[in-house]
Length: 249
Image (cartoon, rainbow, N blue to C red):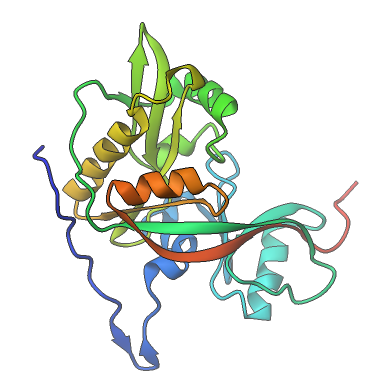
């Protein structure tokens, strides 16, 4: 696998009868769940989500469409929690927003993507260690089958997993780098940057462009990603909501 400095240029949204088609990264989870990640999807009409042991990510075809919210309520069930991204206005007060935050989306524009000689492929057998590392570092949601969403790489020291990164949401032409984390005792060695470059090399090799998300409050991570070749594309909101009604007894 050769080093790649300049990312491939993804195809631009194409005109449709009603105008320009939305960019896949404007609603990446929906684009993934109705495209490359269809096999992981549960869907009711205009709402979709990843299977419960894969990822907590949920998506609406159009957050401004009340029909999508009705489909989401049917998909998730009454009185349950679900995550929804984007600038949203729930259709009624029966939807309770439990938590909200800001999310930053960055895209690869000048990343030096290259394999790492110490990085090892992680799979199902490594999940217990991966879950332990995630529990100690809190990079974001990672569940028992998240590893199936794409390639995950790790670095071990004396046989112990001390850093990892991998792939999550995959809209057409793009792949999200996620679960970037390093054991607190081994930070400051550039392990996360090395793994991001290595994961990006695999993404580039199959013709996709890397992107990633981080919390808007995580200014250190934003500065790091921008310094290695990512560019801020957009800032949006994410919300944890409770669906209307009471759950069954």
